[in-house]
Length: 78
View 1 (spheres, rainbow, N blue to C red):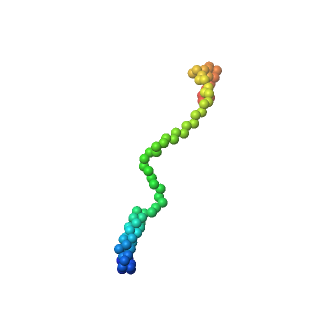
View 2: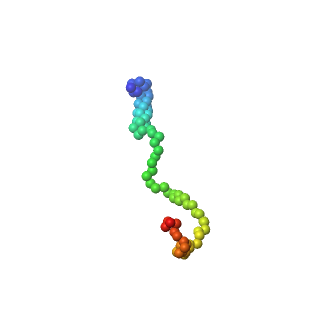
View 3: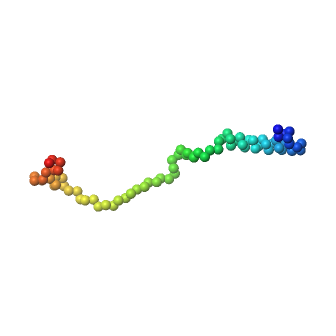
């Protein structure tokens, strides 16, 4: 259609230009123009290690059996 509708001097250029535009339009149409996110399946190059450091004094441990004597009863044995 382009060849027959174009003037005689520009038929080859008009047909070539139309074929080029058709090829570009076909590439986009067949590939699909979507806005889907690109998913990369490789681990990230950085490491993020959040850490919370609490510096609290701990009470000194008591010797075993010091809290229970003959007159003291364990709370769960009442």
